[in-house]
Amino acid sequence: MGLNLNNILILFVMASTLKTIYYIFKIGIKRTISWLVPTIIFLIVLAALLLYKQQICGYIAGGLWLMFFVLPYLLARLINRLINKMKYLRVAYLLLIIAFLLHPSRQIREYFYILKVLNLKKSGRTEEADALLKKAQDKSIYAKIALCQNEGNYEDIIHWLEHDADLDQIKYSPGLLGICVRAFGETGDLSGMINFYKKYRAHFLRDISSPYHALCILFIFSFCGDTERVNKIFGGPLKSYPETIKAYWRAIALMTRGEEPTAINMFNDLIANNPADAELQRGVKRRIDHPLNKADGLLSSESKEYLNKIAFHFDDHQKYGGSVPAPAGKPLWTYFFITINCLMFITETYLGGSTSPSVLVSMGALIPEFVLAGEWWRVISANFLHFGYLHLVLNMLALYYLGPYLEFAIGRFNYILCYFFTGVMSMTSVVVAYQLNLTEQQIVIGASGCLMGLIGATAAVLLKGYRDYKSRVAYKRLIGVGMIIALQIAFDISVPQISMTVHFLGLVFGFLLTLIMRHRVEPCDAS
Image (cartoon, rainbow, N blue to C red; front, side, top):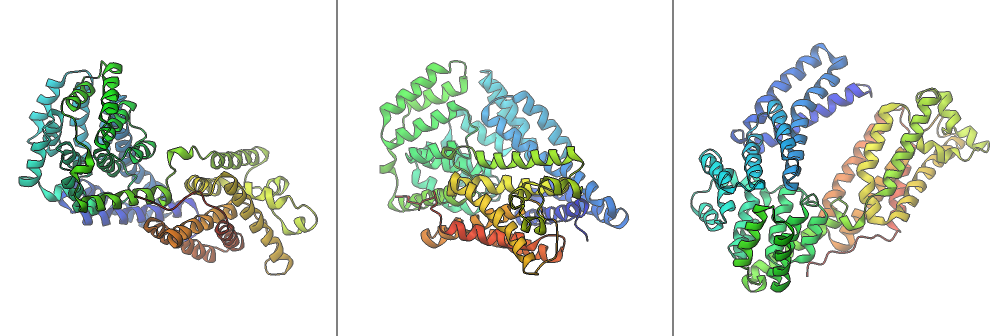
């Protein structure tokens, strides 16, 4: 199977389908029937395309996968984001209809109730919202729980958990898990909240930055008075939440920390500044009338110990999980390098085509003989040229995903140094190898040396995190990076057109350089 876009799409679609099947059987067929049926149909279509239309199979299968699996998933995430912001709910409703037509799953159907209720609440028609929830509660457990939450009857949610709850449904419904965590906090049972989270933690989404898991962590830190980490969550995974919601939970954290007068002042400001938000007004007044006690006296010694573990894991993920904390700012230099590469590609196309050898040579492609003749600048310029759209897109996607975290982890100056140093040194190594008669004359272009340098640098950051601070998150990500490196080496060996020298030495230079650098990430301290 040669290296082209069609074959890459075939491999990607097959891998994605196998991953979907794995999760279907892991969660249970009854709960994922809306995913199982289209997946089986898709596998039949994919097999037919492989037999009769292999030359265009990747394009057709990729388009179908994008339309019926990826697009509904992305629409659901966008709808969830609009719901969190409490904005553009009519737009969200239209997107929901599209998502439902493409993939009529149970999870998407639940959003219809949620959006209707939110629209009624936002317009102040709370009685109609409650009536809709009461009508739907027999069909939807989400509606039943939302009705209790809407009325502030968190004791009823606890009673439901202890007597009538479907435990399997709770395990695989992250939205329900969040509401249940909040119910324990609202009723003042903080030890119960910690124990519930501890019991079901394995069934939360693995990534702590996922919205559902982050929401559970927000409730725990808020009800336990950890104002610092509440601010970090709102600067990271929950940064899209409205400022009113952020202010509300910051006030909750202050109240449970023991700073009740400050919290009451924040609540009064919310009431004064948002007179049209009936739902917020009702929630804030309820909290002022029924203030929460200081958290420290409500936690058992075991709960405090496990709370420290939660905090440690959260900090560990903040530092080594791959996401960029809000205080670090935007990855400006990553965007800069992407922009420069794209501008160079546009120039290639304008001058005669990105696959034209004469254009590439005239713009600075690396040819060892030319460099030895004095054109040293080619070891720099070749890093910003690409052969065809696929080459550019794959490299820029890799840079977009690799760059931001590393720019935060080692600092902008070190990041710039690492990008240029690994690119230049890997290109120079090609020239040296040619001079020593280890390789033949060739034209070398692309940011691959820089990107492999960034992968090596990421491995160095994670290795130091695991070696020096015993970070479990760093260890898990390090294994993942190691697998990527192994696959890349195997790919380079199997495809002779790709310069393995550039990739391997870029990786080595990036790893060694970053090992001696000073990093911005520090050891986690949950105390």
